[in-house]
Image (cartoon, rainbow over the protein chains, first blue to last red):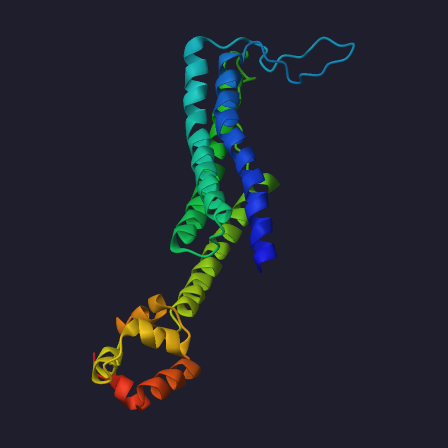
Length: 181
Length: 68
């Protein structure tokens, strides 16, 4: 039992570092992406070939801002999810494995994932419009995508809800044991 | 809960302090306090046995049922 708690504490500390890095890196990525969208190539590694740019026709600043605004819900849901994961790891670092606060955190993570799927689908569609805005008539398009990645995230969200319920039950048992004299 | 723990009454009748009883039955004073204040969700038969033994009483003297 104690050995497991020690493992949980150790792994949580490491994972918290990763989560905190992502909390800084993800907003930076989105910001850099939309600020430098006109200069970004489709791939950073290009050997013996001219780098192919993401955009064929450069976007004006106002469209870059609109693009970033569409990215905001995605970004915020991701950050909300990560902040909740970080809080969860703080509990694990302290060796607390069953508490009502953790149930709430798991539910929040699940909500963040569902919202992320919705926001992400809208964002991808908005991107398709913005990226083809300056194309000649007939070549502009709007795409709406819902693929296996989105389904996978929804499955993870369902799992998070299931974990929340399990932790809630565990919390009841833990409390009962705590108050059994 | 409908079950009321009358441990404090029995303790007073026996003129015994809570911390002395806690030491005698081998539980912490904190746990005895949980029992006295009615926060306890369950009591082990072994604990009940020890309390009855040291307070020279019956389980019925300690526990009472009252309709909520």
